[in-house]
Image 1 (cartoon, rainbow, N blue to C red):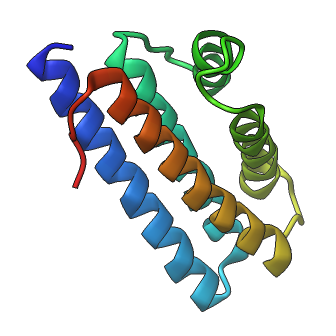
Image 2: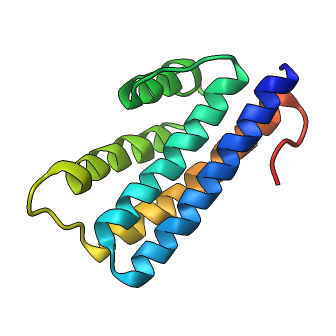
Length: 137
């Protein structure tokens, strides 16, 4: 992995961690749709970090998720559970962001934040295995 790829992965993991922290703040404030959005972005940025380690990217969210499945989930590098987490989060984020009169439940937001935490841990582990060096805080 090039130094640019390592720097990009580190940056994206930092953004993922910040999005997770932001999700907690939004949950505490009762901004449930915003908490769902930030929990999803935690997973999205982490997925982008992992893809970037192999020089892969997609300009679309659905493409990022598809690449994650193709390159890491299908070969068994990342668990099927991790894939289900980001798919579920994407669906919830889409509802929260775009469906009129929709408000996520506190339970949905809490579950997605917990998933985001597990997702980020798993992606960090895989990145560590991929690059054989620690690139995150």
